[in-house]
Amino acid sequence: MVVRKTRYEELRDLLDLYRHFDNGDPVLPDSPELKELWGEIYSNPNWIYLVCEVDGKLVSTCTISLIKNLTRSARPYALIENVVTHREYRNKGYGKMVLKKAQDIARDYNCYKVMLMTGSKKEETLKFYESVGFRKGIKTGFVMNM
Image: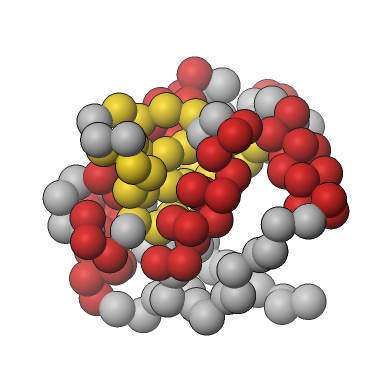
């Protein structure tokens, strides 16, 4: 088992892992536009896609975005999104491992905070995020779907 940055050639494996989201998103088909988008994402040092690999299979992932900032003594902040673990590998600690790695990256970049939002109302999901150090009720979040 290893937690690491996603490799460029693992796009299809990453997209297959995203099928385990409970949000009904369609799977993105292979296309030149998708390849171009992935190239842009992958080459940006402030967008990091992490994966947990077990026996050659990607089983958990999250994305951390590092955002430069002109407040808080010019310290950046981070946003974690797209946290998902393969259904067959849940409750084994893999999701915690990718989130801990994301937190380590945020510390290494001297971020003053890490934010994570979830659309889930499930108590088990909320407790999961609390178990890795996130606290609810600190700030009020607003979302505008576009």
